[in-house]
Image: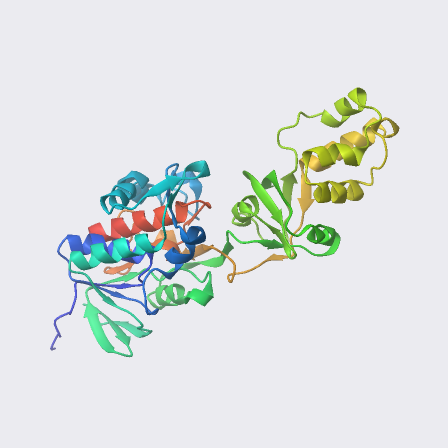
Length: 394
């Protein structure tokens, strides 16, 4: 049997955050790598992230900030490539950065700087790119993987799936990674949109009239809780608190919102004692945006001075405002989702190298894998860490 000598040591599918980090590390280690990308330019999701400034990592990165069927899976890669490591790279390229709230690091300038940095690192180390290449087929002959695109075929003993998840399809995102994983016998955890606005219907329609109103709340679903701003939209709920909780929400379930996270338990009863003539809606309006206060008062059916309202009713109102239930009828879907929950099952992969246990030579990294970070730079840190771990192993 005649074997064609493989063209490369590794072919990486996808020139996003994880793929480019992997290519950089592998090329630095002397591997011949080719990055195949269907878009005509690299890093399209990087470019739009963080409002065009790229929230490239989070200094509070820790395993508990990630969702996965196996919460321990992320520990190895995250411990070996940290936010400090990535920051050192950013600073070596003279890219100015700043910390926003909650440990989020952003470029002062543009996300384009992060993309240029990665491309420069890959090419300087001898890695190659092939842009505008749609993968038509991937085969394995027992020794090498062969990737066919409209430009022809290339082969290598190692293949890395770094094509992300289906979120934001207008940027060329698709479920390709899952199809490929299944082709090679790997299980996939059912993907669903995450970090996504939720939609409201029925009893909650009244809240959609508040489009544009925002308030700091604590949003919760099951055991997960996030304190940040919630934003009412013409379709439902958004804002950081809602995007965070959406990753923990399943269709049919409700979420709860605490509109007054800082107030003591019996604050309404106390207000009644101190200002008996105060009107209930005025009291709410002093602490919340006026339109929101009006809708909540209307929903609670409490009108008039506090002294005329029974303590029992006020206690019920306190309870409701502390855990106001919303039952979303859906989300805005993959079109608006920043990331995907689910993906290639972590049980199929080595947490050290990201290599498929049943398929030596096949690797999966980044968003394609069943690992999802919180909002705020965590998903980028997973891309850097998983890409780096894979690049070290190639």
